[in-house]
Image: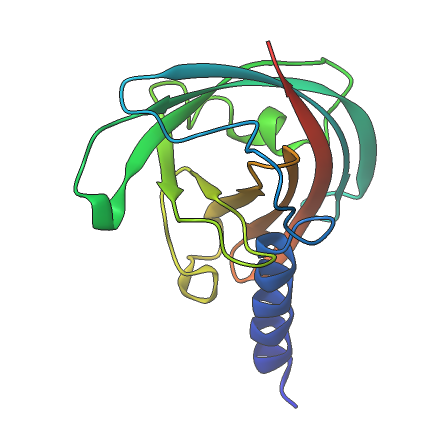
Length: 171
């Protein structure tokens, strides 16, 4: 297999892993619901590893704000911003994407399906990771409403640049 094909396959695998959360979806009442006009602040304790442009790992807390908007029921969306990230949590997607999401990055909402996330947070915007330019950065964060667990993949060009997982709580 050619190196470019291997990179594309690795990117797709990483994106698929980001779409799955740390466990099966629970039948419990969601801790986070899509409520048009609502603004929710989450504090998330995370562990991250970065492989590009340099290898690093860190853990810490990030704070994000989610704002839901009222659109067609078939495609409910919103925006999210990064409020804070610990200064030593350098491998976190929050450290990499804070400027890109300063005025809001897109959230997509999907009804709960077995083991799939309810919310997909994009930074800076939805894109196909195998179609990124060499220096283009993309983060995809999958958040499940019943546990507030998430996993994320960050891509640099068509290769994986970092992985992150964690659990959030409402503030």
